[in-house]
Image (cartoon, rainbow, N blue to C red; front, side, top):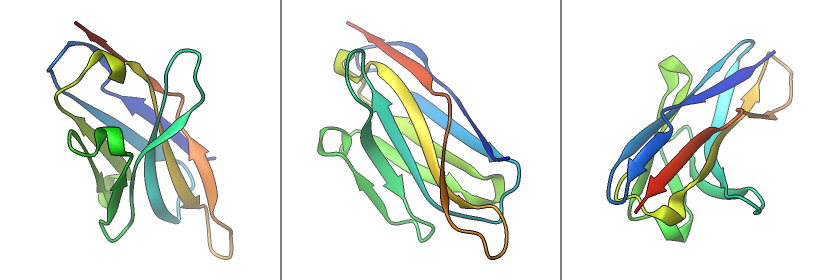
Length: 121
């Protein structure tokens, strides 16, 4: 089975930076899009950023000028560089990957367990 593990979250002051990582392991044949989502307390999970195999990216408007998504296909890893962090960015961050597990298989979405980011004033 495919497993996604996030890391890099933690406690940071306003204006600081963090880099989140998410590594996929298991039965992996092809990885299509890699995405980041966030979920604040009492809120639903929402889209943050996506990167396609070509390198094409798209961001949610609130973070598009501060966050950068990237990927390393050789390492089955997606990153999220987070700069100029604000208290409003505090949330659990989840990675998501669209993966084919073998030949003649369909794409499936896989999720990590999440990593906490807390930004203090």
